[in-house]
Image (tube, rainbow, N blue to C red; front, side, top):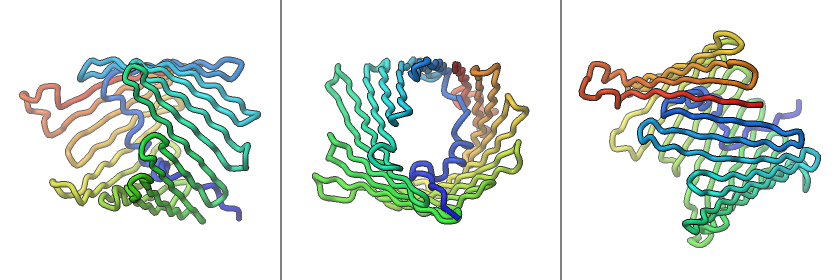
Length: 292
């Protein structure tokens, strides 16, 4: 039986991460509007108002996709005067090979960056090599191999100028249609995490993540558990709680095709009766998305 293409290094444990991190708009209010033209150009305007600082940040982005030639060009301009350009070329030089050049420029501060990435994926293997052209330069490579659901991955960074290995990490995992388990050793194997995801039924998902940092002065293991339940085809609720007593709730509703609203609430359950803490210990937010 042919082996499927495994997930990339950054997507190991993605099911659990998405369950515990996505659809919780608790830090303010955000708005995203996306439109698609007949010539395969997508325009996106997004903005966020931070509830703590009241700062408003936004960006406008244009994305052109040439499906025939495997070419994607994305350009964005942010309110912090940052210009981003990304050029992707896939399956043209070789099947399974994708080249990605991402550049950034801040004209006011004369700051610039350029990262070149090559991604190669085939059944049972998914590799990536990245070069930070202007810093170091630093070379980063990662690879994930898979067989019958079992996954093994590793990542390493090498500073060419310093002639030293600056970062390395490793991961093990098992992925099945209904569940996934992933173990990570990050930060030069100084931080260890274990995560799991379980699709209990077509309407209910559950997951958890535990993190142990050997360099942490507080010690102990950080633990977070969460669940997601679909109310119907257009709405779902999410909830998670960590060992620090922070409870986060999320509700997402599709108002109509292409229009989605999400609301989030975070409560520090250890300070519910602490009047001195006021509302600073709790957070609330909302997100609105328009896609046409």
